[in-house]
Length: 102
Image (cartoon, rainbow, N blue to C red; front, side, top):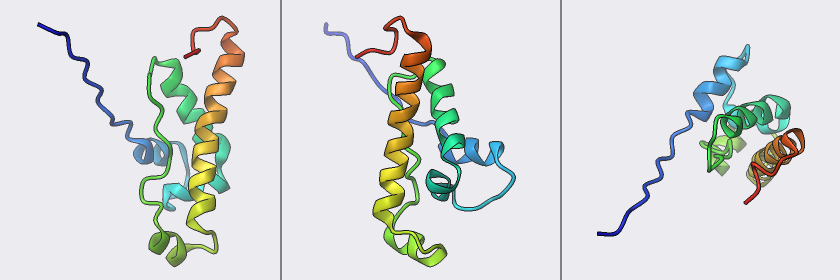
């Protein structure tokens, strides 16, 4: 019998970001308006042992972004990916022992 590995993805990114913030704006806006908050949340997941880091891009679609901001969806998504990558880089630098290497 072969061993199967199942990966569950549910980080409750938006809910957790709202718990850390004093507003209820769409959380995809935080990628640009509050990137440090987004990075801190990703770092918390990484430090807790997450093997996959979710980007804060749920709900970031062209109609939603256009309806509530002057941003464009591409910049919002790129900022979300950048926050996740920077969080990992910062965790690696802080640890300095290779625990977050591939």
